[in-house]
Length: 126
Image (tube, rainbow, N blue to C red; front, side):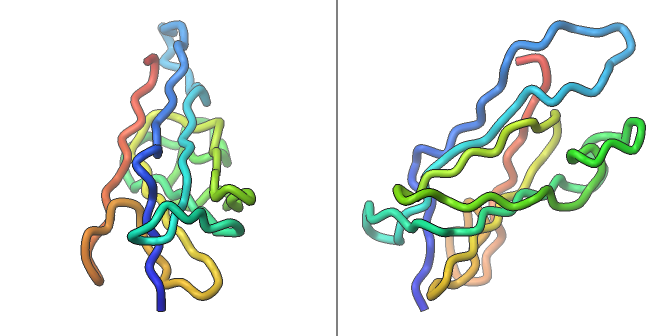
């Protein structure tokens, strides 16, 4: 099976949010990137990108379903250029997982077979 690799263009996008005395939950961040075939710049269209918040990184405020609590958000699919964009995230630590037909599933930042992925820290108010 082939392995997926993320191009170095995976970027955490954080938008400026005004501070709130009540520390309200804001959904002002996003992650985007391009999925490419390992060892090349060939994009992998149709890759399923799943994002999951790590447990304990943010309290579940008001039972919000958009990622305040641990668990996956709805996956996104890469376009014909292998590009994906996930918006509406809150501050916390997130893990990305990639799955495409004909390829081995791989977490973002995995450096070797069966190795761990690298979490992405998203800070609020940036």
